[in-house]
Length: 253
Image 1 (cartoon, rainbow, N blue to C red):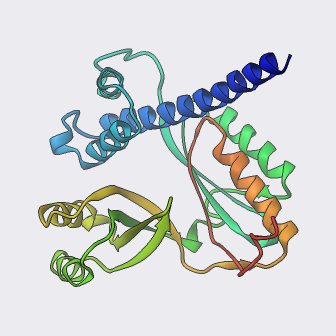
Image 2 (cartoon, rainbow, N blue to C red):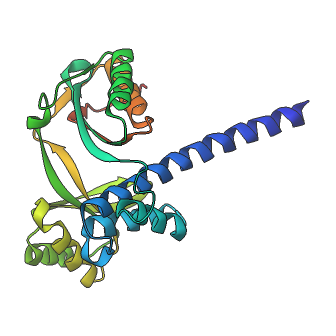
């Protein structure tokens, strides 16, 4: 019986991993479709598409899947099929924290209903367009693998026109996150690559102009559950919140 139980647990765990992998594949494929739809199907002339393809390859998506997504986006395949569009949703979490949700959907009504259910379940409110968007600005963010020569990095960023950088710890690895205006994202990325820096990712990201401090563990737990529930939705690509958890609040969760 113990053996059967263990095998059952292994199968359930594999199912969860496969499901998560499937969602990642779907999200990245949609990003490729939309990028190809709004620009050239040639990644050499479409930075958004090139970035989406790089992410897809890093996640292990097969080349044939990538090529199929490009064909869909450029109208070469299933022209009358899925019509994906980018849309932004806005709302409030507990404690007045503002949330900005980026989605790709072929059914706005379904996506809005799913988001509204998630907000209602965890003490938030899905708002109207523009209700919190003014609290955020879009930036170009480039992630560079460490360790790096900080003097060389700073010199390269000044020459390329980047605004700032900071070091963050992610998965036991030090990463330099470079921030730049949207119009210079491609230029700065190319400059860093030419200087032999290992660029892990280059993307547009919404950054809060101000942040809301959350010190109560129960509020922090509700907010994290809300963000997790939103991120789990099939149509959601990314979630940004202008929250700052005070020291120690996450330790108690």
